[in-house]
Structure formats: C-alpha cells, structure tokens
Length: 75
Image (cartoon, rainbow, N blue to C red; front, side):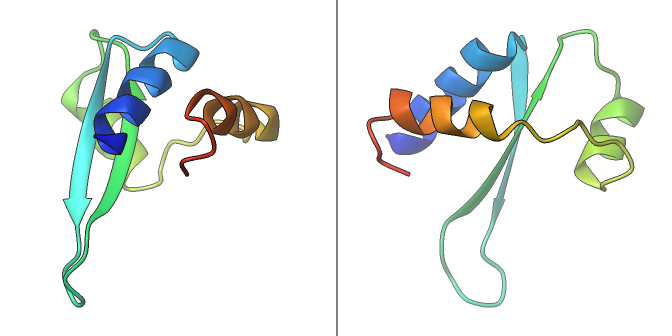
C-alpha cells in the first residue's frame, strides 16, 4: 500500500529505526495518517513530545521533494 511504501521510504531517508503511526479520521470518516520517524532508543517522553508538537525538526523542503520523487509522484 502507499502507506507502507511511504513508511519504508521515510525510514530510509531519515535513517530512523522505527516509526510511530497515528491513524485519524474522527469527524469525517477518512484515512488520515501521521508517520513519525524515531530511533529505536527514543523513549515515551520523546515520542509524545514530537506528537504533541513540543519537539520539532527544521523543515527541509528538499527532503519532501526526494520522498515524492521516490514514491513516483503518488503523493
């Protein structure tokens, strides 16, 4: 699926060991995913800090372009 392909590429491009996946679609039924890459050593606090927006990485627009190219324009 596109979700699994995206997750695999996300891990490859970030060098992360694992990802946390949030599946949403509460008010209007739909598939809405958030994929958060993490090192396997990341603890609960670090994971929740990222999910809740207390920890952010600088945005790299070039990285987004690479991900889209490797997915074949599917996103």
